[in-house]
Length: 353
Image (tube, rainbow, N blue to C red; front, side, top):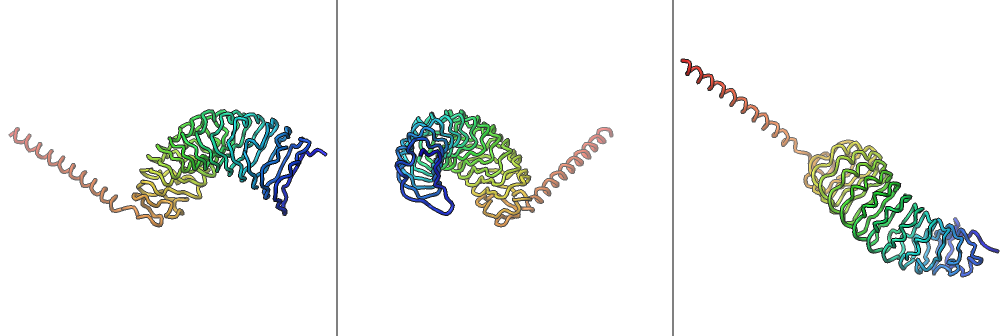
């Protein structure tokens, strides 16, 4: 009998050991699921010849072996999930021949090497998750060819060379996570074109420069904006006030200066904020999350003040003193003006007499 569907996904039973070498005999297998078990060893050789494979889910096991040699060319493969295993090796150019793929999830393995340019030829791809591997090199410039992409996770690798500006072409993207790499460079203004983003995580990737004003155009950001642990500087743009759906904002461990814009108090959906470890000064905005945030959210900013626990109160006397000084200056100007007029009048009288 030829198998079309094989599933080891159970509710109460966890299966272990190696897969049978003949599990896909007949080569007609289309759907193969073995999720959250304890399978180990390499994938059976016969899997390479299953040319009709459409969906493969093998995540959360202990499979190992070369990631590229474990598969043949599966022209009909649509969905592939191999996350949380021990696969190794490089991603070879042949992955660009899986033309029907819409989802590739290979996170938390031991994959090495560079990202092949052929990978960006997968025009139907909607999910690409290669997080927590050992990938090196840069993110290819032709990233923008993946026009249907909804989720891109390349976090926790060893990628370098900056974020390519072509990321701004991914206008359907909803989730972008490049955290935990060594990308460096600046945040491109074109990132503001990705107006469908709901999650943006650029934490700890050695970024420098300012936050572009255009980031305020990402009005659908909802779950997370994390730019922490970089070397970003300058002021925080007030345009971020437009992110009214945002729940988590983390700008900590950077080099921001100036004040926290008062307009940010209008971000009514915020539940967590962190501005700690910067060079900011001035009063912390009042209202909403700013009044409820712990002092740690503003720690190590010597110039910040306000009613938040752990911060020094803003110096009211300084403001009063400035106001009084201004009044004294005005009074002196008035007195000088009056005296000048009196002297002028006396001089005129003397001339007439």
